Amino acid sequence: MIYLDNSSTTKQFSEVTRLMADVAENNFGNPSSLHQLGYESSNVLRKAIAQIDACFPSGGRTIVTSCGTESDNMALVSGSAKLKRQGRKIITTAVEHPAVLRTVERLKEEGWDIVLLPVDKEGTSSIEALEAELDENTVLVSMMTVNNETGTIQPVKKACTMVHNFAKEHGTRIFFHTDGVQAFGKIDLRNSDFDLISISAHKFHGPKGIGALYMKNGVNLPPFIMGGGQERGFRSGTENVPGIAGMGLAAQMSCTDMDEKNKKLSEVNNYLYNGLKANIKDIFINGPETIGTSLDEPGSRCPSLLNISFEGVRGEVLLHTLEQDEIYVSTGSACHSNNTGDSHVLTAIGRKHKEIEGAVRFSLGQFNTVEEMDIAIDRTAKAVERFRRLGSFR
Ligand code: PLP
Image 1 (cartoon, rainbow, N blue to C red):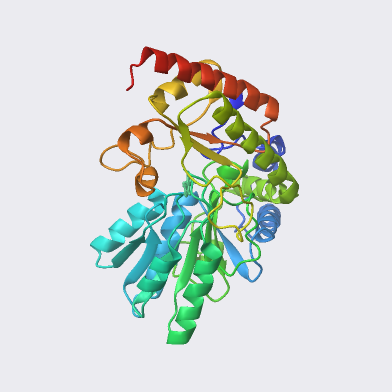
Image 2 (image 1 turned 90 degrees about the vertical axis):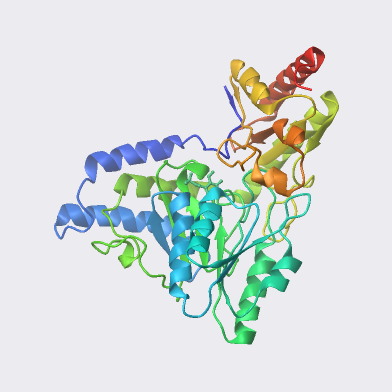
């Protein structure tokens, strides 16, 4: 099997699976219980939270959620509720995940003024547009760290500084949220000043159905889920102890030796890209050409992603053909589509319907090798050649 769909989800680390089984078996006490079993479970949670905290900027806290989607919802809904007396404007980008876009649509129905920043042809959000839109009515800016379809690293560092400076100059408060779901474990987020960061464990070799929202000290959002006061009152509900333990270990493992792993990931990604270009005519990349691995390289491509359009071929057909050889890729548009069924991200970067139809997202992880890429390149080239010869998709 050659798994190239790591942006959809990742294979759980075996160490994580073993830990979760052990915790489920031996730490079944409710962390809120006052007896020894409860105490032991709360210790498991404390350890896991410390592992996650270590991957975030210092001076904040980790609120556990059920997934990246919930983290995004919490950041936007609770963040806007907190500052609603100050203003009614939220700025985000045209290429966010539906977890953000659907939430701001709802907020718009409730009377919020929503601005979607445009992106350039490589998918980088416009800093100039952000500057023009910031005003005293603005209370929240949400810009993803890495786009899940093109891999574009967004100018989040610059945007965050701009937003905070604006607020300071005008004596207002504006929260800067970033959806870090595709970045966490690949792009170091520690050296940043973000107020809110969303992550999701299954994107970094942790379990599904568990995520987190980083909240900078002093942000103190109102509760998102009301009840027994767990998660320091921000998000009630008895904790998923094995899931949190698994997320903690996965975070620690993913954020260790990031530079080294990114170097290898970049090599494998470039190898795949160069191999596809050398062996297949009439293809083009959706997103930036150049790979980058830090917040200081906005406008470059995270080494986990490579989105290619194959002219005259339908991505979905290619996906199912590669699947026959146990090569798993994605078209990247299944749940991210606009009314025409086209990806809203590829539409925003100016791609035409046919070009979007021909797009395949290869998303790499730390287990992929150059040898696997040789096979993927060969099978993709053969499939594209065959479909083009048949001419049935023009
Ligand atoms: N944000 C981004 C950028 C994503 O890529 C995804 C999932 O693909 C999500 C949010 C949602 O995460 P989850 O699947 O944990 O709800």
